[in-house]
Image (cartoon, rainbow, N blue to C red; front, side):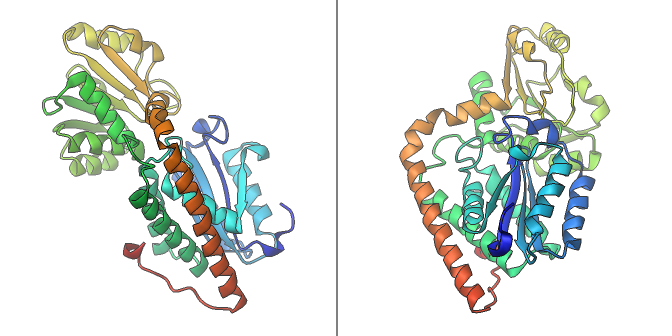
Length: 355
C-alpha cells in the first residue's frame, strides 16, 4: 500500500465474486479466528477502531486509522487469516471505501443484485461492534450514513423489484412444486444465516411443519422457537428424510451429507410425492446428480442467484440511478468528514433506530 499519509478510513475485503468462487472454502472460518483478528486490531496502535463483516459470501474489515502504517499490517493479517493471494483481496480508502460500504448496504455489491439480507447483516455487525465499543465517531458516522443511503435506495428505486431475496426465491420455487405449503413438511439441516433466512420465509408463507437440525443444539433450539418449528438432534436428521417434502441443507461440511442413493431411497418410498431439495452449502451438501432422479427438484445457491438476476435487465435503469445516487452521497459524506477533520470537530452519534 502506497502513501498512507492521507488515509483515514479503509476497507480490506474479499468476496466469492472477487475471488471467482475460491472464497467458499476459505469463508469456513471459526469464531475464534475472527475473535483473534479483532483482538489483534484492538492492540494495534495504528488502528483506532474497526468492524469485521462476515457473511456466507464475503469477509471485510472496516477500519479508522490513527497511524501511518495501519493498512499494510491489516492487509498482512488478512492474507494470513484467509490464506489467499494478495491479488484476490481488494482495498478501498476514504471516499471510495465509503461508497463501497454504501453499495454493500444497498445490495449492489452482492451476487444477487438488490438482495435484502445484506442490509440486516451489516446492521447486526454494526450493533455488535457498537456494544463492544469497537467503533470511533468516524466509523459511527460512516456506517450510519451508509445505512441511511441503503434505506433511500430501497424506498426511492426499484432495484429490489422482484424476488431478489434468497428466502423469497426459495418460497416461490417451493410453491411452484408443491403449491400450498400449509401441509408440507420441511427439514432444515444447518441453522446458519442463509438457512435461517429461507426457513423464516417459508414459515411466513404458511409452512407450519419445520424441523431444524444443527451441530450446535442451542442454535437449532433458538431458530425452531423463532419459526414455531421443532428442534431435532443433528444425529437424527436422516430419520426425518422420508417424511420431508422440502429439505434445505446449509451446513459448513466440506463433504456431501446427502448422496444420490439416499435420495433415491426416499423417492422409492413415496413415488407420488415430489421432493424439493435446496442446497445452500459451500461446498455443496447434496450430490448434484440427485436432481436427475424422477420427482426430485434440486436447486443450488448458484441456481437461486441466477434466478434472482434474470430480471436484472428490467432493473438496469434503476441500477444506474442507484449507483449515481450513492456516488453523490459518498462524495457529500466525505466532504463533510474532511471539513470536520480540518476543524477538529466531533461527530454526533445517532442511535441505530435513526439509521
